[in-house]
Image 1: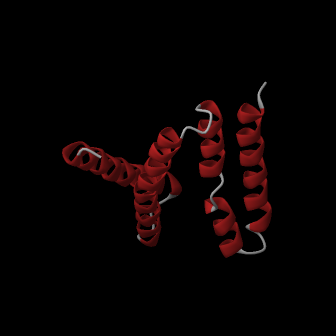
Image 2: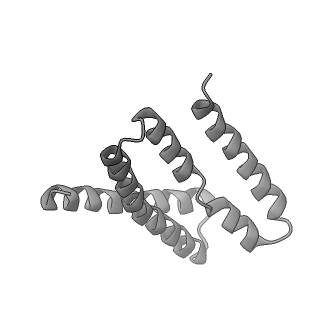
Length: 116
């Protein structure tokens, strides 16, 4: 097995454990840990390695990561707003993913129209 396959899984497990432990001490620290940039650098490493550091491919992927943050922020905002209305976890997550999907679709359409 390659380290590119193992490291993301191990890092994800470590973050999940950290969030579970830290949540009892500080909700803010647990939330920051849960949202820290972990998968993006790992994905960059995997892409960089697979294309041999080819600049155009890495730049293109990095731009995709940047755009991918927008629907993720929309997801989190929707979940936060849904939690304020008193929704239970399942419906909160469904609302979040619904908003995420809509925002992602808008980004895809805009990219195609603008040729980005």
